[in-house]
Figure 1: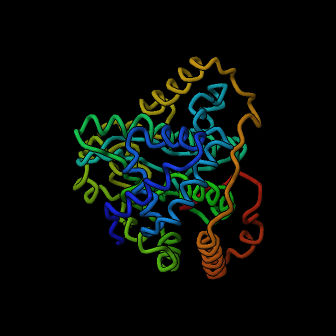
Figure 2: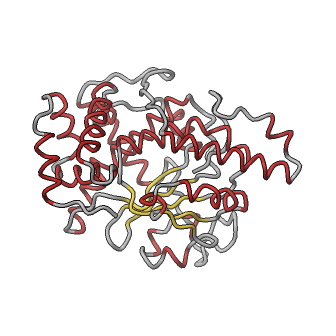
Length: 345
């Protein structure tokens, strides 16, 4: 782990002070009053190298300006029935806080289908959740817990993961690259739960390819991970898929009805949806056209991400051949434009 000293931070601050005014403005919107903490995130993402961190930040700020990211929370996805379909096929939501104040973000990796809209809408929705987290949720957590909270915890549910997940490598690579380049070091820990054999087999291959910084953040838990997660969060903050006793159960061990944090009806998504509508009303934003209303440039995938994707593909092929699934594998459109199958980490 690289030690980020005050001297390194000051050197970075000096460089940032010299950037052009448009970049400064979007940087202010991004750091939300926590400039030094934001600079530290970029330094960590580039192993303490000031020059590399500076380039990364400039590229990020330029991306924000070019894609009007500062205004994305004033661009609702309409109509609501269409947005509900997106939420039902892009499973993600916030279910509570850890004992240390980190927002707990749940992601339904195995059961997300991404088959109700174009890739642009799924990316728009993902970035809106990122921006809402950074501009609303994290500042609220900082105030609530009386100390700076700048990262979240993610619990990734692998239930339902199948070989057809290969169809989503392009979309997931785009989302992953956007996060890596523009929202670095925002996740404290990734907890993998309900992992089927197909994930476990691939994880053994992929794990050595990850950077040590990323590898240390990933923990694969046994089963639904309930007992381990209860060490860092209260029962009420557990994702609904971690409260169950058996796979596919809709009720937890206390026989209580569980609130699905993926649903648009959940309080988190209701608050997010209403916030976007309010921001749109403030700027007099007209409702976007249903299709093709908001496009974000996709950065080129990191070479490491490409290598990982290729390794996953090879491992899936091996598993498929072992289990007589070669025909179904040949029918997949790996890295194609089609959106419509389950996703993977």
